Length: 591
Ligand SMILES: Nc1ncnc2c1ncn2[C@@H]1O[C@H](COP(=O)(O)OP(=O)(O)OP(=O)(O)O)[C@@H](O)[C@H]1O
Image: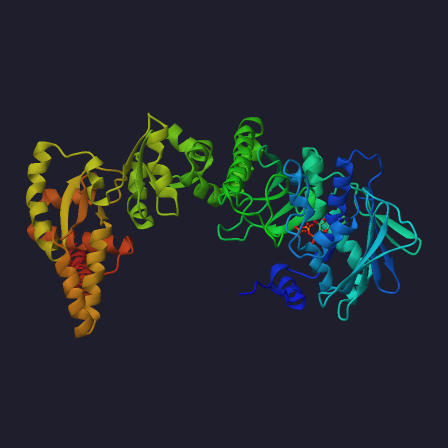
């Protein structure tokens, strides 16, 4: 049995890298800059004194040359690291390997996307020969010693491949080098003929003070952000700046953060570097302690990654807490714009809940109110689980001084329910619309005796509509009745109405559903004894007039509450209206 080696089809590898691993052909610029910086780092480790520099030259012949004065390569290193795909010098040093940006030993291949041949001329800081390596796309390479002595370092020559001419134009090269390298810690110069331009040198945004960082955000990211928050993770050697967006964003919107690794741009589209809840910010962050994936467009998501992400999130939280104390106006503004996002955050996170809850607004019978103001008004709160239920009681609740909050909007119900956990003096009840009228003032014993026949009559008349009656005193006095239902009742009504209009097959399915409801739910019609008409109807003792009054008020309350009416209820409404009209006209004729 003979042992053989795998054969690597370099052409296929390049295809794979360019089409699937790298997002665009321009990444060769990133790989070359990174190799130059790494080589300079390695030479510095030798203790050499030199002025680090990377020079990129562009020639009219559509050739690009990248010179660095880094450590260079010896002949054995060329065979080992350059000519073996996947082999890298940057994993060698167990103690100091983390100082390098590269780690996989494949980055150079990206040059083959834009160049058919890579020519590398190098002189190692460790020995004297100047060497030339020529690597070709078909997988062959040559090495030869040159007679001339080059300075210590490496020069890489790329010559234009058909269809990639654009990458050999000044504007494109300048844009690529700036994109990836503007904050690299080594001076980078781009030159053509006698023209030379410095690519980097400006302070990175994470080293700017707040005002300058905000100005940078405006000029570079196109927004006057509400705030620039410094973010840091010691364990991830990360520091950055998180900008609070000046407009509301949807929870689903894709988050795009700009992430640098050891000051080289990794990606400007990274979504995961901040916690899920941080969708109201966009950040620029430089990370030293996390490992990029081979595509260099995201990080390997290990335990360390999640710890770093949490630490960065903590910085946001701490800053918001500080802002609430030091700049309440700005804090209010942030809450106002991002309240949907902040509500979602507060539901999930107890610390944020405590931070935001008093500043978030909720719908009450008095309009939208901040929770802080709601709690100042009342420590007894009732929250509805639906918008419908809130609407049923809002007006009456206000007149009774009962603080009802609409819990029908996303997150509001949970947020209000959580209040009791944080504020011992606050009581939160869930609105039960049917029993809501129990909060109202009872009639005296003698009034109740008088009202009893009226209520029995009402129960009898309304039984077929699954409605029971009660009588209380409540405000506003001009409201004669309050009709309340709950979810269960509404469901039954809807099922019954659909049943009446549906065909046999679907109807029998609905029969089963209706049959499953063991206890038939009832709506409640609460008469208001403070209302003069109701009082008159109860006190008059005339069953005919009482019937008319009950039927009219019942159907009117359905109309006013926008409840769907059955055909029987419509008929009842018409009849009671006509009767009232004819009685009224009769009386008019008598006078
Ligand atoms: N400018 C340079 N100076 C000195 N050595 C270099 C230079 N460019 C490349 N090399 C050597 O070639 C090796 C392979 O480079 P390549 O860019 O393919 O991978 P890498 O930088 O090691 O890792 P990665 O794939 O993560 O970029 C390097 O590890 C380094 O030893």
